[in-house]
Image 1 (cartoon, rainbow, N blue to C red):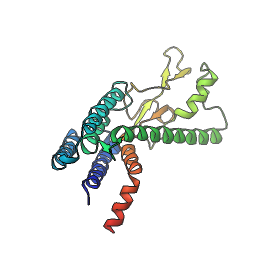
Image 2: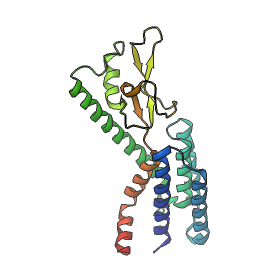
Image 3: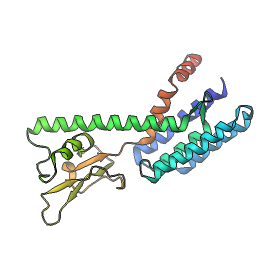
Image 4: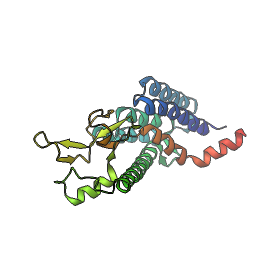
Length: 230
């Protein structure tokens, strides 16, 4: 087994452990990132002959890329640490692709696609079952925003533990509400206020999607590993 394959295994183990924390609590211990980033650093020392300037460029570029995403609230602090950890463990794939950036971009695409499908599915079910407008209390909202809302928000389900509120109430006329379609600045909560009927955005565990993105990116290598093990 080559060190490149060992790096992939370490990444999958890291994301596997982190995904459990992210799914259950949305909080990942910092010591997890520090430990695995340290392991990545040790591998670089062992495999110093393969280290090049491009590896260092990938590390700093990916870290800056992750910081920009965090600064504009596209990712959380744990996700930034995940990007930095990838930069330490496996910064470059075949001396060409910057792995942390590729994994992050692929994960973001997976999140957008899965969340959109999820919202459309739930809104379609509500529309068919209730046989009336989904947005009857949003009379002041223009039609184009209602169309956009159909793809990016949904009514909260009881089984959903972590969500972001997507409604804004007027104190004078609480029946009339407006959508908050982009809520990156809002904190993830269980949204007790508003109960099951409130509109929310998904707050998926991004680290879990990073694990899926890593598995897809290195699928040929993973299949070879499975073949070798078996």
